[in-house]
Amino acid sequence: MKLDTNGSQGVEGEPNSIAFNDEFTKDFLESSDEVVKGHYLFKSQTEGYTVYFPKNASMDKAAYERAGDEFEAVGFVENDENENLSFYYNINYDDQPRANDIEFKLDMFDTYLDYTGDFEEYTKDSVTYYYSENVFDFEGKKSFQYFAYIKPEIENKGINFIGSVTCIDYEQPCKQDSNEVKDKVLNIMHSIDFKSR
Image 1 (tube, helix red, strand yellow):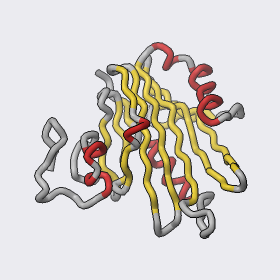
Image 2: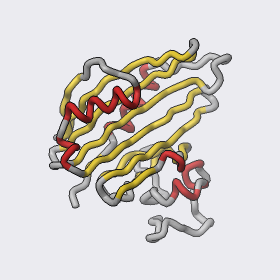
Image 3: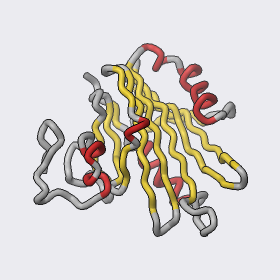
Image 4: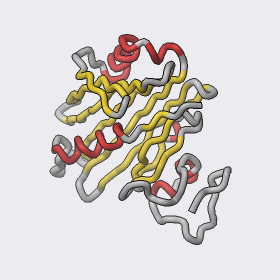
């Protein structure tokens, strides 16, 4: 069932998920249909990209920022109580000439994450990824971070992506460094699809 233009839909038939129960979040979701198991399609208000959005995630309204169609900052969180894991995603979208300056965009990870290390460059479906990962340790509490600058062939477009994984309760076991967790974050990252206007 498609949403109408203002993002509303009758309660009847609306999915019972964290994403659709959050008024702010559901305005960004293209449809109540899952595009892949457990994910809706998130459509940027700039109309510059889409990304898979976990059905049990909600947007961080305080982190949302937009400047016309040239810039959008999105943050969203998904807590998996069963696995004691919290996933926080940041997507900073640019549609302006600075998006073509790879060095400048990689330097942003120094600002965001205090990261000055190397990046692995690879291409997938005509999109170039400058990817790295890091472990941030604060007083013995680790955060695993997977991040990339994502540059499509489309001129002037790009995204700084960060996926951070922490334990909800550090007193309890959690497998934040497992391959399954990393794959989950990378599946979100690789689902970003840039749109031409």
